[in-house]
Length: 126
Image (tube, rainbow, N blue to C red):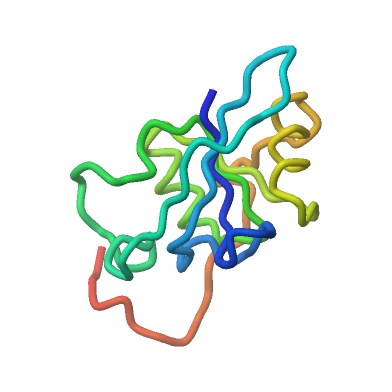
């Protein structure tokens, strides 16, 4: 399974997943250590904070996104794309992917998360 990790520095698991533009993508298979297969360095308009289209997105096709922090809206939007989100305190991306693959890092339930409150306008209304 493919697992993406939010990593603004391509070295550690970073937070603010909605604004993240850099992802490390790993392939995790049973009985073998995960391996990095891709690095995504997206333009600002493809961060989930900015991307509001229904079309294809470069993150599509991964089973999960691991991050240090995210808002409920990010988790809901990815769930709508068939992607699970897990929050981790692990800083090492490989360790986080291994923990997720081993079932030791449960995905979050967006319905259980608090709302995402901040002081700026997204420029759209629901």
